View (spheres, one colour):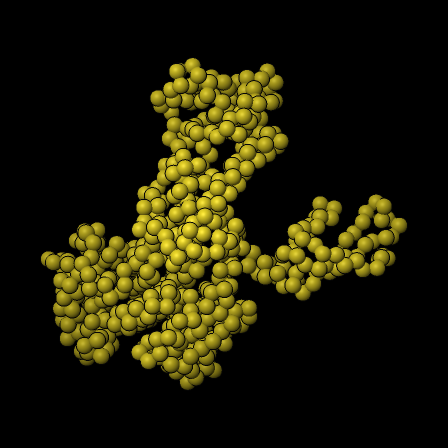
Length: 575
C-alpha cells in the first residue's frame, strides 16, 4: 500500500469512513493517511493516528464503558474530580474504597493509625501475609492503586479520632468523607466539622452480622433523580401550536393501508382526541374506555401496531403525568427566595418557578424525548424535531430568566453555563432536595411515629438492631470496650447492654417499647467483630450511595439503612 504525505487536520466531532467512524473529544489534531493505490477509486482508507490526548480519552472510555452507560459523561467527570477521605482501612473501609477506585474517582486519602494484625489477614482481602506488622493504611493504598492507576492514593498514619480532635481543618479538602467503624461520639464531632466545610459525610459500619449505612449533609440537591417509574412527558393532552400544525398535516383516514399503519401513535392520539372534542362540544372523553373505543373505531387491521401502541398509551391523554409532591416541595422551598449567596441550583429553581408561572402554563420545560414508535422514519423524525424544538425553546426561556435573576442579585449574568441550564431543564420534572439532621440531633431527638410503629411490630429486628447499635456505643463509652469482647464478662455485659438499650429507647421517645432479649444476646455475641462477608455487602451499599452523592444522580438513602445478614434483609428507617 502506498500512502500520500501525512495530512494534519483539525477534527471536531466524528469523521465517518465507509460507514465507520472515529470520535474525538473536543477539538483535536489527528494525523490522517490517504490510500492512493490502484484500488483507491473503489475504496479509500483513512487511517487514524490519534494524538496522545485522543488515545488517552479512548482508553478511558473503554475502561469505564459500562458505567458511562449508566451515569453518563457528566457523572463520570464528577467522579474523576472527587477527592475522598476514608477513615479506617478495615474490611468495611477497604471494600467501600475498592468499589470507588474501580469506578474511577479522582483521588482518595486513607486515615488509619493501626498496624496490620494477624486478624486482618482473615477478613481484609487487601492485606497480604507479607504485610503483617506493617502500617495498614500504607498496605491498603498500595494494592488499591494497582487496581486503577488513574486514581491518586494518599494515606495518613494516624487514628481518625486523633485527627478529628487535633486537626479538624484536615477535612476541608475533601468532597466526601466516608467514616467506617467510628463510634457515635466521634461521628457527632466529625459531622459538625464536615458541615462547617461543606463536605458530605457517609457513615458505614459492620458489627457482627449487622451493617449500618447513613448519610449526613445539610442539603443535597439531585437534578438527575432517574426514578424507576419515570413517565414520558409527551403533552398529548395539551399540544402546543407547532405540534397541532404537524398533526393537521396527517390524514389518519387515508385509504392507503401502508400509510395508515405507519402514522406515529402520538399523531393518532392527538388527532382522535381533537375529533372527539369537536363532536362532543369541546369535552374530553369521560373515561379511558371511551377514548379507547374511539381509537379502536379508526383501526382497520389487527396487525396495525401503531394503533395498538395508541391504545396502550391512551392513559397519557385521560390521566396525564402529574407533578410529584417532591418536585412541588422544591418549588415551595424557602431557598427559592434567592440572593447573592444562593447556589446555582436554587437560582435555576427560581427561574424554573417563574417559567412555570408564565410561559410554561403550569408545566416544567419539555425534555424533548420521544419514545420509539411504529412509523415511517421520516414521520418519526418530523415528530421528534417538533419535540426537540419545543424543548430548546423552553430551555432558552428558562436561560433568559436565569440571566435576568443573576443580574438582579449582582452576579455575572453568564455565571451559569448554557449546558448546565439545558441539563437542568431536561431533568426538571424529577428534581429532588434531601436534608439530613445532624448526627448529634438525630441521636438525641425524638424519633418519628413510623419508626415507633416499626419497633412495635412483631418482626422488628432491624429497627431493634438500630437501637442496639446506639446502645453498644453508649456502653463502650462508659466501659472503654464493647460488650462481648471479654468472654468472662459476657453475662454482665448482657445485663448492661439491656439496660443501655432501655435508656436509648427512653431518650428517643419510644416509651414502653422493649428490645427482645434474644437480639440483645446476639449483639453481645457479636463482640464488635467486623466480618468480611458483612463488610463486603455494607461496602457495596456505601460505595453505591457515595456515587449517587458525588454525581448528583439517582435518589440517595433518605434515612439510616440497617442490613441484617441473619435474615438477609435491609431496611431504610424513618428516624
